Length: 299
Ligand code: GLU
Image (cartoon, rainbow, N blue to C red; front, side, top):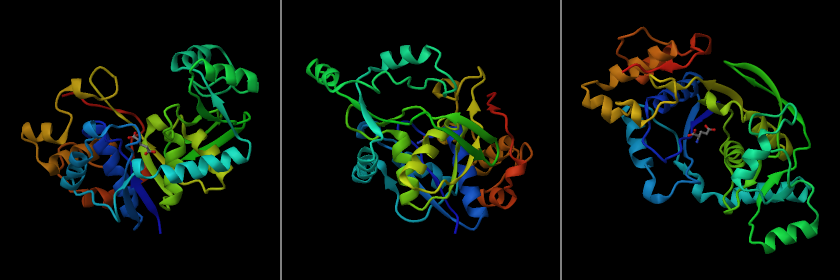
């Protein structure tokens, strides 16, 4: 049975872009007659700024239910460490002492067909003495994957294929927390997810995740990356863009069926002005009908 999921980071209330991705992920799972899971990706969110409760209320208000318990990444560090341990034992990791700024600067230098911002391997071949001296200077290392410049081809149901060289991505950050790419790969396989629907801002990092799946012996799920919602200025939708949350749309007098209809229309699944339930949208969901361009929210 198909298993899909929605996996929000709880650091801010869901905006229309997140809600649209949530709707499409739910529709993709449900129209395949599958299970749909909810995972809170709270590895880097402090409990003070955790909005997961209001996020879950918004999803429920839109009629986007989920099966089973809600999973929180912050409770799963043991699983992530098991996977990291397997990569370590296979000789596929190394400590990296670079600061963010050093990585940014080094990654600006040309270094072949790797993704933008790719890590150029500064710490890959440090000697034991060099590592000791960095540690004595108080540097705490992150742990990176030794990717060995492998090119990976990944397929998306909407975007087609991309082939790119995966870089030496971070597996564990310097503060000891598992990195997003590692956690998402481990969680999806642990939860039996075989259908990943998410924003297309993550398409660029997908080859890294596919490489990790291969190294860990995991199956690759089917991917569907959906376009983002942008603000009137063409930047990624944000608070500055006005009424972007469900509560803010309600304050403008919009009902849930109007919001769902608007989200569906923006994705190519409804005509402007239709009022719909999530079930209505699932009934007409078809990857071939989805728009590939971002939706620019005008008001
Ligand atoms: N937590 C990620 C986000 O909120 C989504 C990760 C995923 O779906 O793989 O953008």
